[in-house]
Length: 283
Image 1 (tube, rainbow, N blue to C red):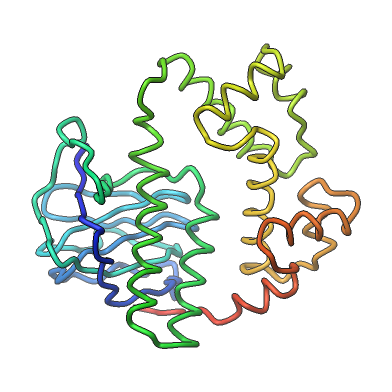
Image 2 (cartoon, rainbow, N blue to C red; image 1 turned 120 degrees about the vertical axis):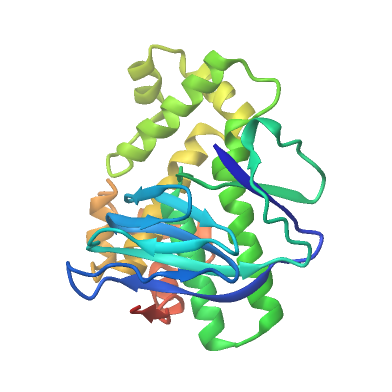
């Protein structure tokens, strides 16, 4: 696996961004030479896209980063949707770096060329907020910083999360298993004690281990994941607030709304209204 390192002492330079929905099941991605970096975040279906070296198949939750000068083309019909982000850098490095050879440096981030997101919903929400900002303010500097923030989040979800220093492999595996379990069951009324029982550990030990790696308690992480799922449902569906609360395992919608406001500083309705302006492109 290879990736690309970016110096973020200055923000990356946003070129354009949007959400793509294939206009028909027979759509095939165009052929072209990229002039800048392009990030794909797959949200639905399968995208069949290739470069000079490899044919890629992106599924829901996958990401792909292609560098400038890449010959990019579709090789098969793709009925899908994805978010995309084009950007450049003040100090570009078009050479791919093997993951094993990358040496972390201050003010740098490292993005693998492809992978699967631990928190797709969070990235999607940030992409929507970027699009809303572009439409509402059309401020280049703000757009650059927001795009850089998205790449920083991607860095922490992909490379950084896999390279937590000083943690034993067994502990990291347990942490990853707990993260995956919460992701698959976030629509259930999850409890720390139930998760601990599922994995056969003491609640106090599991909570301490999780917090030492994630930086937040297991209980806080569960709420975060539920609120990120709620934010996704609020911006990408027409479900009512009460329906979303029930879907996430909250039998009391008032409790759900209180938790959501504590996490985002907005009511669910205000959040939905703030994310209403997104850019949809067909290409």
